[in-house]
Amino acid sequence: MNPTTTSPAPRHLALALLLGLAATALPALALAQPTRAAAPAPAAAPPARGPVLPEALDIGGRLQLDHSRFGGVTTRDGRSTSASFVRRAELSLGWRLAPDWQLSATVGYEDDGWLLDSAALRWRWREGLSLRAGRIDPDVGLDNANSSSWTAGIERSAIFDLAPGVADSEEGFGLRADAHGPGWHASAGVYDKRSRQALVGRAVWMHSWGGGGVLQLGGSAALARGDTDNGRVRTRLGLRGVTEEAIGRRSDLAPAVALPQGYDGDTVTALELALQQGPWLLQAEWLGRRLDAVGGAPARRVSGHSVQLAWSPDGQARRHDERAARFGRPEGDGRGQGRWELFVRLDTLDGVDGLEAQVQTLGASWFLDRHWRVSANVVSNRSADPNAVGERKGSGFVLRGQAVF
Image 1 (cartoon, rainbow, N blue to C red):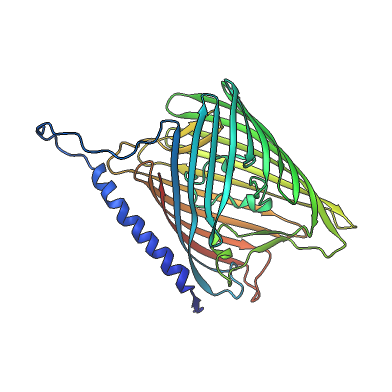
Image 2 (cartoon, rainbow, N blue to C red):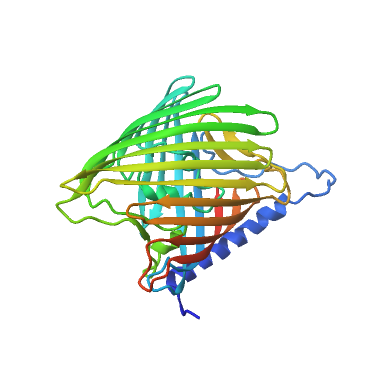
């Protein structure tokens, strides 16, 4: 049996936070239980109230705590290891300056410090058309459009490892326009991501019918130019924890080239399909990336596709936001016992020179209400890029506790 390794300090911190999250959820669970009607109590003086926030001000937050265990190809020597970490800790502020103007900002905890994750001024030019300027994320693909709070999997599809910064502001700034109408959504933006500049667009057609039925078809494109890099493409194989522990490793899909060879830009294209009928949601995506070679570097293309099926045993459909062409959490916030969702996903990645990978994920989530969620994912993966002891297969699991307020 392979020995195991752990990182005690982060593990104990995250496990303590998970216990605190569970303890906090207990009163909410008690409140969610149905109660018998009680006799009306005598009228009493209204309690003293603290300061009331203006209606134009909205304050929120999000906390995601993960515990993961993995081994095989996802570690350098094949040994199993554990990682417990704060996946996301964010505070957000929205301020409606005027009926058509809104200012928003989010700060997040990352790398032992707080940073400005997003900050934007939004102007609703007219009904169905708005403009945003500031630190904003591009709109690429369905899984990225869905909030990470409500994606079926704990982590998004591994196909986005092929272009890791395509849907992220990367601490840069941009200008983005969003438009929508009956049955369609479109967005386009220009972004300065410090080391490169990008032009990104997404267009989606949708059709909906009774019983939560939705058909969604769309495509995205992103063109980027900037500093020359070595063109390396790697994947976590569906397990975020591999970059939280020193023993973890990512698998190569395109190895780095040596200077003066390099790549000074890339083109990303993506296709998406979603079909929802009642408690069933089928989601499929394809992503391709072409890197622009300089200095005699070899031509480089990578691609991947993902198929995912989710089902709610409680019969609840997921919310669908036609304005942004995305899915939210399952319906049924009023259920006293919460609601469940099960899903399965297959990701296939194709790199260069025969390098490829596959990730299979099976998971379950329990939503108490719009604030609390607990998830568990089991991951099986394989890669043509072996670790130091020649292993090409691996496995792992992830647990997450989430609070959104």
